[in-house]
Length: 165
Image (tube, rainbow, N blue to C red):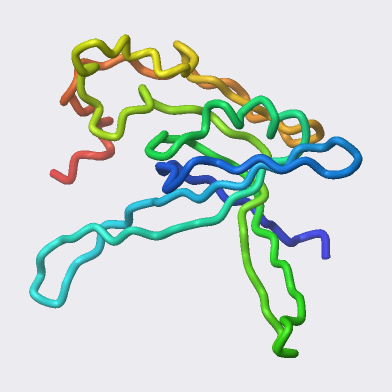
């Protein structure tokens, strides 16, 4: 059906170092998992964060390139599609798994989970590129580049339409 849509976009942190595997034909498959927090209201009316975990795969030359950068705690923005794998287990039961097939990936932040300054003796570089790095899979739709607003830390920006009074 031409009207179907399968698009996923998330920003989260890697829960473990990525794992690169190579196919016999020399193509890379990079597997990683990200955690994304969702804010929800509890029964007593308080707000709490709930972590959700998603398995992701990146393929081809992009996988080989990004393997050095995707380490536990690294924040990434991904865009891709959901894919479901089905197979029969050794016990004869049908198994399935849903993962995100990543079409584009952008490194976000400094790579530090706490966002703090480098520890003494640490250059802070951590082998990460100095600027956000975007990896686009061949054949994936290209989103137009949008300028990122530069704001002072802790400053929020609102349009007149966003203010509820």
